[in-house]
Image (cartoon, rainbow, N blue to C red; front, side, top):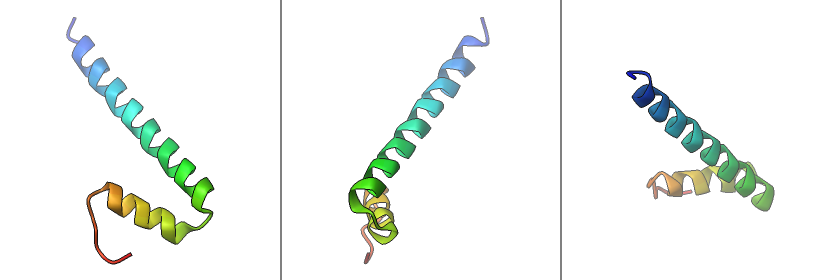
Length: 51
């Protein structure tokens, strides 16, 4: 049963990665510009430096 915990962790990481990509694509489609996308990503990451 040792495989259950790593599988859960890997699944959670995969879900988070998919969610990040999905949000990034959604922001990209809404904004249409890479600078605003990177600014949004920076804000999400807690980096509120000058955009």
